[in-house]
Amino acid sequence: MAKWKISQGMPILNKEMEDAVLDALRNDKYVNGENVTKLEEEFARYIGTEHAIAVSSGTNALAFIFMAAGIKGRKCTTSPQSFIASANSILHAGGTPVFADIDKDTYCISTAEVEKQLNNGASAVLPVDIFGYPADFDSINEIAGRKNAYVIEDACQAHGAIYKGKRAGSLALAAAFSFYPSKNMTVLGDGGMVTTDDDGIANKVRKLRDAGRKSHYEHDMIGYTARLNTVNAAIGRVQLRNLDKWNAKRTGIAAEYGSRLKNVNGIKLPQLGSNGIKPVFHQYVICTKDRDRLKEHLEKNGIQCGIHYPIPIHLQPIYREMFKHKEGEYPTSESFSRECLSLPMHINLTKDDAKLICEQIEGFYGS
Ligand SMILES: Cc1ncc(COP(=O)(O)O)c(C=O)c1O
Image (tube, rainbow, N blue to C red; front, side):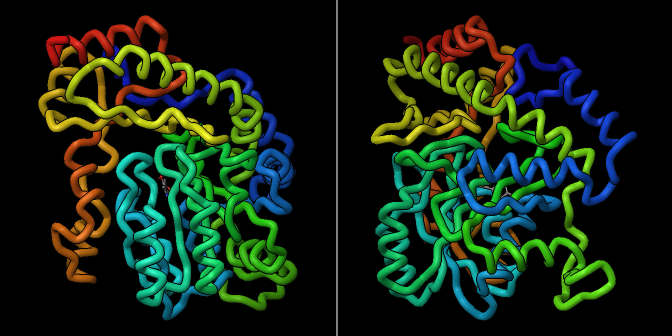
């Protein structure tokens, strides 16, 4: 287990979560328990939406939103620089993902590229709040509105992020979260959440996750078994109570990295936020032409790093096969994939850890 002196990520499990699990197992219903309803209420209040509907994963959260909003036979534009599930969810719901390249500074989808895809016939947009940095929803919502397209937010990496006074997850028609163990807030297993103010989408998603039930033995929709387990919801409730404190810790580590690394020539640092934008640093991603050698150097010195993501979605083997995508179509995403390096980012990182990581990077560049 202790292969690394400093690991890249680290999910949190504490006594309060263990107690909540045992209490849920002994006293709550295994499926559709009170912990699920409570987590939904608490999450909706936190995000600032009318509804929060717990589901079995972030992928299903996105797919159910698209099934409810309607994408079958239509195109939705999204970022090629994301986890593959962003685009897969559009296919799961019968739509076709078409990509729009990313902005070179925020790494979120570029508004100008979105506009091109809307002009090419896309009828929906799925911006991704990548690494916990909210996409530019004001301009994307405005352009989509003019073209009669709807916008769905992939907030799977952005629990707690703020965009101009509003939480990520409340910036579009509906949003999806993932509670996978690497996330800022997890249920220590698979899980997800849909947030929306739209009653119609909320009601359809509630049915889709639960076998299309109208009542217990009456089904008026072809649904799935894709609920969040009660035990996982119990963990999620404890995590949610700690989220702001944990995000503040991440932001502090990002500031520490930023202040030490800003003078190192050869690396580009991520944005710390501005104009009312507060990212939550799901990952702290630097870019460098020496990515592979720097990664090797850090790992030789016991510092684990990640690459998010080494292959943009359009160049994944299945997307090449299905859509005949080729290198060169989305140059900003492609060069990002070659240069990105995720430094350690978790709430157990100490100032000394951050100092050691920065010293190793400075040493590598001889600065
Ligand atoms: C941006 C993004 N979208 C979608 C997902 C899918 O979530 P899950 O893994 O819970 O299905 C993830 C999570 O890994 C993600 O990071």
